[in-house]
Length: 449
Image 1 (cartoon, rainbow, N blue to C red):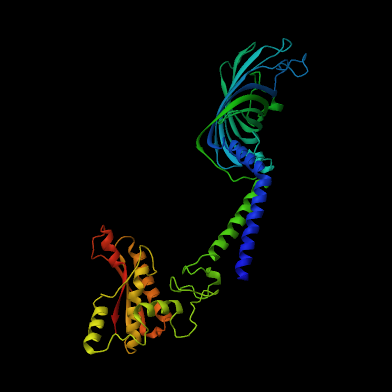
Image 2 (tube, rainbow, N blue to C red; image 1 turned 90 degrees about the horizontal axis):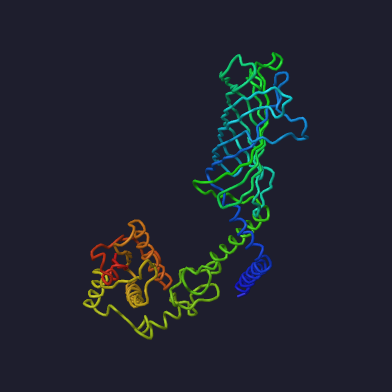
């Protein structure tokens, strides 16, 4: 009883602790679940991007050519760059993207000689989600920041110039790109973003104004790009494990509580349905309906091998074992032996159960009485299942039924070496769809050895 009381106290404590946490943090948890859902709305496998902005050549330029307006502190904004791209999300922290862009360079004030060049560029890049790496991954944040870097291939072509020795000729350039992209989610599947990138070419013979570069600057070019754009997500929606420390800690606590409750539930199982939990039950295969003590042991005060409650029931219905003799003469003995051998005495079971049903204990008493009156006789106990269900499972169920009947007889005073339990497997002698008929083959029968 003391153990049961301790268990109840533990359960009440767990329930109280969990209830208090739920009351105190309910609003916070509800908000976090909502925010977590919001933050996960844009985790899709693919994202399409488009943007417009300004590209600015830094070096090299020929003498008397430049693109900056020296009269303005920050120069003039010139929308001269257009970009389309596609992004593939590999994980919560890494992805890949490819972009195709068009840039047009020209002078911004009349102090520079007139020029105009056009560039097409294609990039292949790796993208890192800095929210993940910097642990800036608030569940309620719509903001994220990406770092991207990779290779870029481009063609640069002069369009107009005062002096045009290579009119229309394109040059193929190659280099690297490095950029930073802050993003802000505005719809379920959409972001607005600002991209700041620097591009370094390692094979650029032309200046940005379209003439041959000075030999000192040959094979090198540098440009900057700033673009504002919109991206739209599509494809498979992904779910990442939260990296928010508070959420992770809460999930771990919940897992620990679930494990503790699961362990308690296992301990509280009552296999033999005698009212004593398995972890306290010293005899977890007692006969159903028979009184047990606090340790789950069937009560047998007179120590005759038959549980007292079962003994009282059987004596009331049939008389005592000593006064009842099933083999007073040879004819009666042969009849009872034939009844057992030919399967007229059988123990029945409910569907998917290894415990004899309530109407079967008369049959068990019949067998018990026979064994008591015939101490030289041994029995083979054969269990059967109906033909519905898995073959291997039904074989095991049939053996469990035979074993349980054997255990009842052993606990009723029969020596275990007089009994052998085996599985007869599935009995397919009746129509599988006949519910009433299948009741008769979920049984245990006996063979006298």
